[in-house]
Length: 479
Ligand SMILES: *Cc1c(COP(=O)(O)O)cnc(C)c1O
Image 1 (cartoon, rainbow, N blue to C red):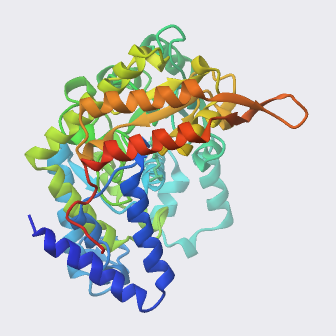
Image 2: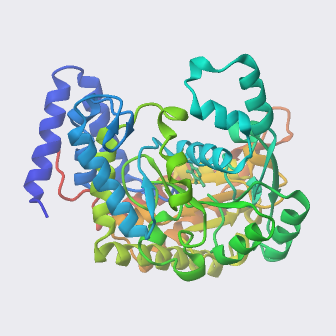
């Protein structure tokens, strides 16, 4: 460990240098630290990266172009970028037990695009694609391009439905994946809220997808990837797992055996900044069969790699290989379960009745509220969450009926199960004291709400008190 003094000095000096050019940026960075320190962050997709990870991003690696892959660059002078990219990939392979790791994607969405392209190129029998890859682009005729689009087009993808917790990039229209692929989705069992593998198998048999996608951003349970792989194999589909949300639980060996996607999937994508606690970025893991196509990610679908972020990925992945990361990962789940139990005991309605990962989905229709009203009332009270659809949501994807909460960030701060119970009390208090508002013409509103500002203030103070014993970035003082 570096000395706490070094961390304070590093950030203070950085701000001093920035302040000399544009003081408003330095002020905003300082204000962000204050805000993050003071708010009870329950956003399931956020975390707090280590000072070493953050500092690895603020340097001259940002100045380098490094298209290509380690040792095969389109630019000269990439030897140091090679070092950090190779290190990040090596740590990722060791950590996840993967044959190949591609650490260039700038985000989770980009990682998925790389994977989709790799699967298309690998799987679709396309003479036009073979021609296109064998020749220089300038040598292809218009007919070649028409043939390529025709041969690659209209492929099928089967993924989890949005309201069951799936992600936009798994074939939904607002994302390019929904325009590239003919998509069908599988939901969850209405009675239990769990994935119904028989239904997934049935959908796969009928639809015969090229790609079966598993992974989610709002499903509070484990997924059995062994069964999903069997389903994929039974219809000849490529099995892709997007572990963006739960990569930290895989890294920390909380999800093992049937619940570890890496040994079961043909290809795994992830973000690096959610439960994995690294810099904002993405990554693809795969076996040797898809490695060559995955490595074409840049410039096929990605802009130039971000060497400073790859350096930070190497740092964060090194951290995730330490024994204390496994302890962190198991505490994330203990905390989510304590939060779920605390809410249930007080009468909240939870999708699936609990959790076995890092997130909890509260069905706030039990409080007579929409997700939008609940989210805003909680925010007024210093509790940062986000609204989220619940299965078969009557309020749709904008207003929703759910609040998604997650524990990776608070667990990083050091809060434990006792604090989770106290957090459940704060959430329950706000939601029971909030009532739906109405529009000017007297009709019920899905957005407006009534909450006594004195109560919001009181809860806000209680939240701050709860956090006071667990300072965020305790080694960093900007004063
Ligand atoms: C967050 C998330 C993404 C997108 O990640 P970005 O880094 O925001 O692009 C993709 N897939 C899943 C399942 C996610 O939860």
